[in-house]
View 1 (cartoon, protein in one colour):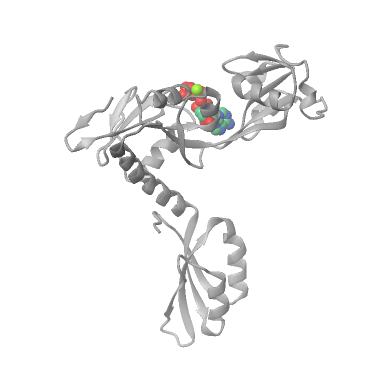
View 2 (cartoon, protein in one colour):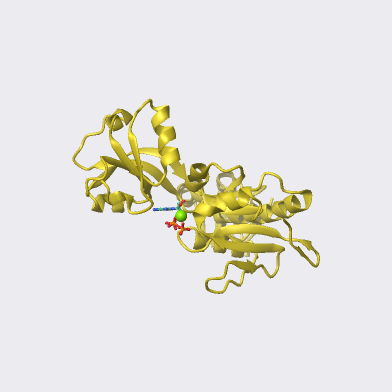
Length: 292
Ligand code: ATP
Ligand code: MG
């Protein structure tokens, strides 16, 4: 199943139609320089400046569509990907829609590990993942599958515990529950059909190159500062840069301007050390794309 359009094949990507994955999926494509015009309730849209066709679907259906090659690639949460157990290949983790699939029990109960669940009733929308978890821990329990509002199940006497997605935990708290164990850590991922032809793989590589440049840029900042020449060596040693920092003389004798790239993780700590080493006029600028 391939669509030819003028210059050749288009890569078909499935993304969530609406919901928690939608905004970040569209934004990622946009940051990759791919504009999509999607009218309300449209199933399909074509990118203007990349050979890409976008299908808007329920997230639950995305693994199946990718397995069947209705879509060549898709963006979906790991939780859905592993629950559905379809034949696809994980290409790249995307770093958004992070959440946990967790066991939660009544706030007042004490938890002694997975053994707590022995012979209990567990409500969940993820029976496959819960079953795996129980097996791995040698626990026998009854799984009660429900498709939504899982957090109310213990309160209405439907179950003793739940396994559901959690990000902040506030939904659990409001329902008198507490999170006691993580079954799976999840984020949005890019998956592909297992048998893409060479041409589609080439397009996928092109898209991936852009995705990686965008993600790398997001995790880094461009930094400019003024340094007294006497401390240049110390300051440069704190700033590795992409290869090494750029050092330019200032008009004022004895001072230099230092330019470099800093990763978000070590940012605040290094800024402190730079100040201690006599750096002044520190400017920090977001990077749009980062290559190499
Ligand atoms: P659809 O109508 O497409 O089936 P949905 O209601 O199943 O949508 P959403 O609630 O939009 O799904 O969540 C989509 C995905 O976002 C989840 O599968 C999960 O990977 C991720 N996610 C991130 N944070 C959370 C959270 N706090 N609760 C639920 N899902 C989250
Ligand atoms: Mg869904």
